[in-house]
Length: 303
Image (tube, rainbow, N blue to C red):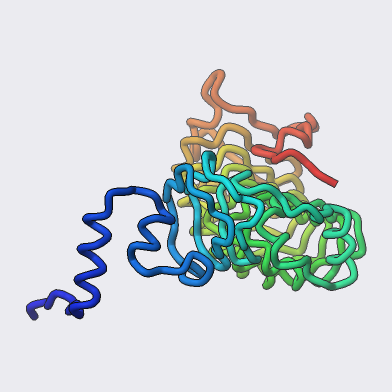
């Protein structure tokens, strides 16, 4: 089948020509040349990598827009750019709203309420460990979240986290979590700690190729087959699990720390010889203790 070029109306062609002939590379200037309203027409837009130059962006509405990799560094009027919970921003691209309050964010979530939408892009780390939180629904709109601590909470259902694709670190130690299916699409996840949970099935993690650190201590996990393709994995802790077969780890050349204390794992040298090369790996089969702070990479913790 022969594909046809998209048909442009005469008005469309005039707009395209005007933009190409415009004597400016200013984002705002080009938008105006194209007849676009910066307060309306860039909601939900793909603005990845855009250089906003020295433009005055006051009134720019990027609610729901993706500005990952965009350069806001020289622009002005940033305190009057309009965002919402679905806006994706580069780190520290815009100043926080004047009324932004981290403690209020925690308080709202703990009473089951979502933070104001205009605050959401600025919530990048959230430590709720040891609190009474059980329902994660208020977190569903926190698309800028990169680090989340939930250890020692009553959390069991991870479904509200399914859309948080920017999440890099997640700590769920000592929770009632058993189903990891909602994490299957979180391909940016680098650190995942599941110590003391009821997780047995690792299949949802099979596609998380960016995972670097995984803690499964004291879980019912026995089958490591879903981890076979996680070639970026550097640290794996299996203390007190039912794991016996290490064959799925044979291709994980980056794996440098493996904790097998209180497991039935045997014949490591034959199954994954690269793990015990001199100076290459830290292998734990004794009562030697791994420093909990070595969980890599761990974002700076905020309370």
